[in-house]
Length: 410
Image (cartoon, rainbow, N blue to C red):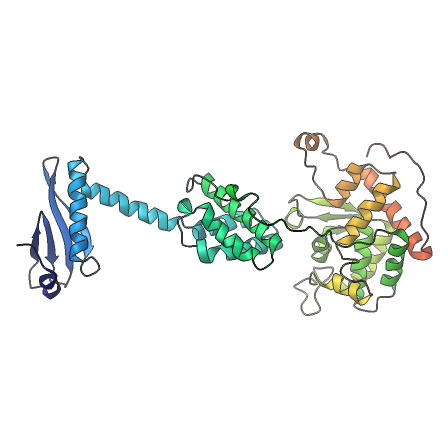
């Protein structure tokens, strides 16, 4: 007779294994250890076989019967239910091992293995934290564009348009990594191009007027805060590196005798070593600074611990103390000032200026033929720039640039 819910519920194990048959090969196996296991016996290719359907009460009588009926249909189609069950179990295991969170964590580990900058890694991890609550446990191959859009809309509604744009790009990078590792077949973020509101790009503030910039240079000379912060601002004006590259600079990177600062690849945005000439004015600042922080590895150690550099807000905070609002001047703005004035001078190749800024040529063919560092020209350019800043600082006069032809060669 077929089983009933009451019979199954009241079934108790004995000293020996016992079967309660429901018909059609389905039975409930009662084990001495207390297990109540659903099993289906059947014949396939002339052999007696068995497939498990789970345990009671996790799998009810009705659910076990439904599984039996599915197995019967598979048999009629010439499919072995046991092999089918193993495939489903493996597929489920693979799906669980290929969730968005798992793949995202692998992607992060890959970036770290490539020695990406710590600031970059923090930004990637921070962005992906927006996605993990909704997408984290989903098999990455099953995630649709609409699901990703929900994540992006949540960020967009907070008014963080640029963050939403970057998040879409970062999620897309995770999917492309999944595709490359055969765990997904498409990138759902591609379909979302144009779906987000476009943020208004605000350039970093910079003083591009020569007279006003001369006033800033004079103000820096009067700065009464930490002498290391004052030195950092003066070096930003002279060398115009990325603020993070200067903040984390170590003494071992500087050859004061040869007047060269070599920034290692792991600390540059483009992930390649970058050399900068050191004009006399920069060397004087560095030698004075060495008397203060020379015993530390870092040029600009934090006042709290010599193991960490000054924070990213230190130089911007100093500019605020000098009376310059954040929409007037930033530490990064020294790069815009140098780029603008050096190009306006008309004496230097654009390639030499771009090299000094640490930019990489975007055109692959042009980059292949522009491998030189323009070192000789950059040495002369940095010396000229330092002298030019001295004039601006002393006189505040607008200096008329001579109509010289751009320098040739390196």
